[in-house]
Amino acid sequence: MSVTKDIAQTILQGFDNHFRIFSEITEGAQQRFEKADWKAERKYSRLRIQFYDTRVDEAIETLNKDFEMQPFNKNDWAEVKSQFILLLQNHQQPELAETFYNSLFCRIFQREYYTNEYIFIRSSVTTEYIQSDVPSYKAYYPAKSGFFSSIEQVLNQFSLDLPFENFKRDSRHIAKSICKVFKKGRRTAELNFQYQVINALFYRNKAAYIVGKAINGHNEYPFAVALLNNEQGAIYVDALLIGEDAVSQLFGFSYAYFMVLHPVPSAIIYFLQGLMPRRKKEGLYSSIGFQKQGKTDFYRGFLHHLDYSDDDLILAPGIPGMVMSVFTLPSYPYVFKVIRDYFAPPKEITRKQVEEKYHLVKQHDRVGRMADMLEFSKVVLPLDRFTPELLADLKDTCESSINFIENEEGEKRLMIKHVYIERRMLPLNLELELAEKEQDYERIDCLIKSFGNAIKELSAANIFPGDLLYKNFGVTRLGRVVFYDYDEIVYLTDCNFRKKPQPKNPQELMSATPWYSVAPNDIFPEEFTSFLLGNALVKEAFMKHHADLFDADSWVKKQENINNGIYEDVFPYPKKFRLKRNQ
Image (cartoon, rainbow, N blue to C red; front, side):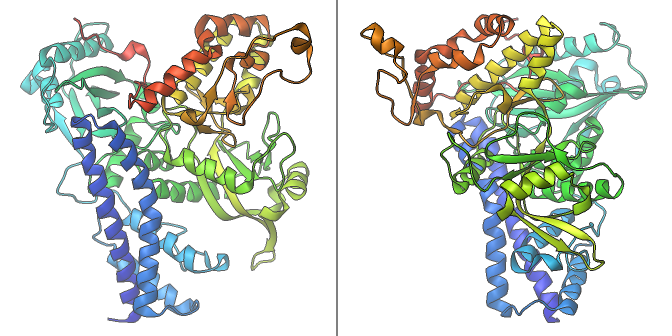
């Protein structure tokens, strides 16, 4: 074999090793769920994210050892890519292998060689109809097996070692819910009435999900069945989610990644896109743990969008951040965040610490309340798409993070050395201001309730946001309040929640400085009232739903739960979808 073919084969072997280890960790999710070992599930969720970079480094080490890698050679690497493409013809994860190839190449060589001649800016293979020994989904036909029997078949499709707590009860609840969807309680079944269920369970946190769709005539109904472990030797159906929005929330960008085992991930993505047409491939790949593939698909989509749009990149609406310069392309639903060169007082944090905070969020359980982010290096954008205001902000505050370059055609470009990219949301402070202006009391109540729930759910996951200002939270399309400013984030268990000591005399009370000692990690929840209870409407909503957030004892109780290994339930679906266990 030629050297270029050997190199291509070595890179593919590196990917195959990565996918094998990835699958082994994912496969273990079933046993962790059955044993209710939630601590181990969080551990392996973090490790699975970290292992990708480890495998890329190992593959590079092998290349250096076996081939004594020389400086970049155009002809050789064009041939390596061609040989790699040939190796993918019958591969079951070709798109993931291409991304692994890109990751390896970009660590070895300079930015000027990141062209489609040498890496996969565009994919070379189609992932439709890849053959697999494991079908991507299984179909059930109520007209053939019976309405109730088909529901029972769906629940029994997966070989869990735990029995159902009450199988007949759960089947009956699901049947009732299905009947409500079909013609207000009348079961009107068309000839093609069927259930199609993905042939793999989706594990995350303390739940396992059956995901599929019901087809009846021309109508399709995405659904997800949430299975929980009662931690007493049995499982039960906790919820049935029906409809695109309900299922889409499960796969949102603010949740930890699912563990779902299947040899052909693209087949799972293809099925999920049918359930949730508004979800892009990049988000769905990330949601099942292939966040590097999510980055690849995002970048391809963004480059395509730039070619077919002409609006400018602008500073993001809202209050400018002290740590990040944030900009957006109005026609594309993402924001770009670049760390500033210096932080004005009272910020006391370094660039390295900011990066560490973002890494923490990437690997932590986000419980649906922290936005996931895509981290890129050496991103090149056309200079003429930047507004003068944005360009001035980047020059003034992010000079060390940008370079001005030209391509081979002489077109000017701006290269950003390091950038975080997140889904764009409506800043909570602007949403509240608009609701107040319109005197929309119901909207204010809903926003404040979701804001408080976000803080409580983050604390259940051992996260304290640090800065609770409304401007650091956003509102998603589905109305959830999500945290997105991470430079002051800390583990809840590292905080010292205190009640303010009573002043001994009027002079202490009137003093400009505190009359009590304050350590760096001391937090006084009573003081939250000064910036969270703005006007009377916000205050009324806050005190109705979340008055306990101003009580130090409630925070200390959450710390005790975490320290004692008690993991609170945080459900990624509304109460209305939950089924009653006592009926």
